[in-house]
Length: 507
Image 1 (cartoon, rainbow, N blue to C red):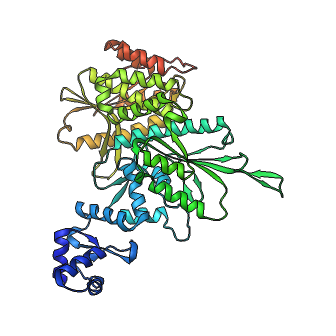
Image 2: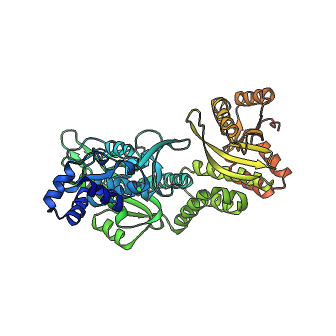
């Protein structure tokens, strides 16, 4: 009988025990109950996945040789959709963000609680189980900290980065919008950040929370003669047209909170670029504020966000050939209310990349690297390969004039980042014999101690070359390269106020 079941799994792949029982019934003539009993007594090389429950007490069974293979992972995800809502929601949250997202973003969108609630799996438990069976992996990203990757399908770090910047930008604007409308109180806005835990309400993480004192939401406490605030909470998903199925984790979270006792009144909001008609009707039917960008802001903001995501996801191509797109995005940002420094920093990287591309170099933006000896991961803002003999790695700090690169930042780059990059390229046959140059570019200024540290490193280093440029130095390079259009972009959009004049940094 074990041979029959083994043949079934070899033919049809891993599956839930209910499906396996029906196949075994058909193949052997056993009744369904007897087939289920045989499956409950399987021994190696047949296995059942431990620690994950499926509907009707089913188990996920497979052959040892199939574990963690692509077919195993695909069939397991199908099994979650069939019989394990919490795990299906957790996977859906990753898929909604393109297959890779920050841990804080996943916690706020996975649909499972971050504190113990009776009858519900913790988000941390789900993540642990998904990691142990290799459906997802958790890694570190230089820009976003801890990130979660889906182990099947195409996973784009550039898309993750682009979505994260766009969502951070919009969450800041939603915060201002809610304050200006009087929905929330000033000074108590909680927005998801890459560091630390995301804001929480009702036992679940959210992308945004803020206390609300509107009548009907806030309650009056007779003992203290003061109102007790309700909450305005939000979740965001940009960069795709949201279907009704995509809303499953959000609606699951909402239903659990609404069915709990002792929860303060709250107003939920779902923020999206675009919604399918069914998704829109579902949100309205669940009394959710529909935060379509074109409605809560305007069509120009919605278009700007779409363009920003598209551009940053294809950063290398745009840096090489389309500085006009960078200019348009920066002009759009000047019209927005809220913090845009992170987006400006990202676009500065594209400006730096364009300079090297204009000089004939092959460039790559935000290149991910791995030191095979230590297992450390890193990321290089701009890599430029010139004439097959020279390799330049650039650290980019896009900041307005008056902002300083501190000594601690320069020291970290020299002692940590440069050695990591150098070890990586020395391990690559295609690059190990090239002359290596490591450069630090800032559109702001270096504080005096940072300048002296970098200057000393430049003079002492012999095995490779250290170079660094502030705003004045970058403008000199752009003028020599006859890139007056790029120089104009830099001066217009990174000027800020309180310009600090410094000595020209030698090249």
